[in-house]
Length: 76
Image (cartoon, rainbow, N blue to C red):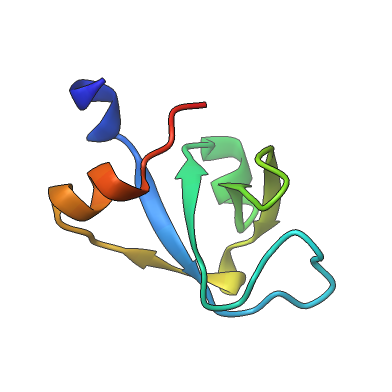
């Protein structure tokens, strides 16, 4: 599990326009998706606990210490 966690990234939601499953000011886990990134989207595990594509502009990438990542990581 530790090795997997090093690939996990987190973002802070700064905009939730027209998105019922996002909360502004909340931290979300993202799943790498190169195809989506090329189009300006992030694959985000939202409030529904499913992953969906959202505009990259709705988030800022967070660099968290490992201890914080461990606290936020919830294995799917």
